[in-house]
Image 1 (cartoon, one colour):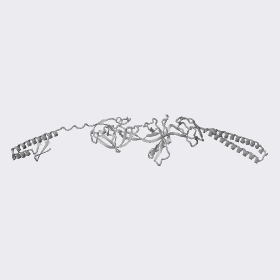
Image 2 (cartoon, helix red, strand yellow; image 1 turned 30 degrees about the vertical axis):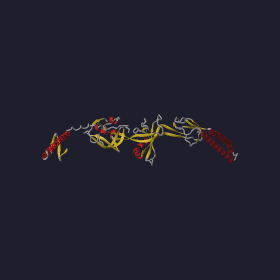
Image 3 (tube, helix red, strand yellow; image 1 turned 135 degrees about the vertical axis):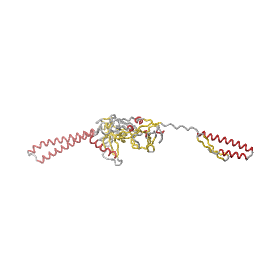
Image 4 (cartoon, one colour; image 1 turned 120 degrees about the vertical axis):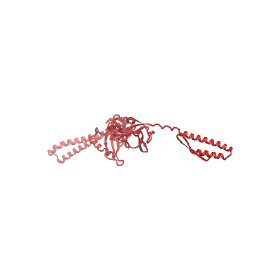
Length: 447
């Protein structure tokens, strides 16, 4: 502290409770000499001023000393955080693809003949049987054509019968050489020609019968019939789509996979083609548009014959049971399958991972209970846990709750919580890495 008095500086310092006067003696000597050279009245006034300044000086020094002796504030309490041990275990690695459902068989119903649509014999969306009548087309024209074909057949059969009788009479006459060979050949050829004409007429009758039968449009398969595309009274033809019938149980799901994934699975696809579905083949799970997993698992069905050059993908089809007809063609389907098993993977609860501008960090609590923020490389999510590819050791402890309270190097009070509780989901057969237990696989863990 620096005080100015009559152009002299008096410096004070404090050491503990002792006040040291640096130049106070010299100041007093100077003031006494000044008082001796002036008048008594003025000296009296200056002496009063000097005593007042001296008092102020002493008060200031005492005040500074008192400030220096104030008790410092108490340090903040050590924050409490929840930590969990890094888990080390074998975990299945899941792959996800987005696909679309479609009927196992989709039969597009077209009429085979032309005519006016008289009746729709099913309700839109009904479950129909194979052979069930769907539409009725006006059959009068085709019944008339059938009658005409049958009459023509009768005439041709009569001609053939007459020629056959003539041939039967000519054979013994020719054998007895009563008639010439020319006459016999003529009768014989007429008989054969009439037979061919009769057979052609018979074929025309069969065609007319088919046309008459095709006026009734039946379902070729069992399934769900869609909304009719044609209405009663329309003039339909073989180019007109009447409706579509889809076989829904089982139902197929079509989804693309990359060329690299196909090469990874090629040997398993070949094994499926040779031996069918095996016990070791991974099952497929389907996540629907509402986020719920379909309750029936499916399996791989077939891979397409070629890679799509424009997208670099190949089309895969899976098959799922659909006994309740819940699934319909064209639905969104996210397909998930455990395609690999990751050995000795390190996992932490998802809540322990902080993301900042594409970088991932975890807060590790050391043996001295101090926080160390580490950059990590993350892998896929497994349930409520996240695979850590790099940046952690099996013996580390990570903070799962209270991350907002800590900074790098801060001392904390850790409260250890088991991994299953910290992650919010039970993890069967999980072994914390810090305990040194043998890792075990967890089948069926979903990402």
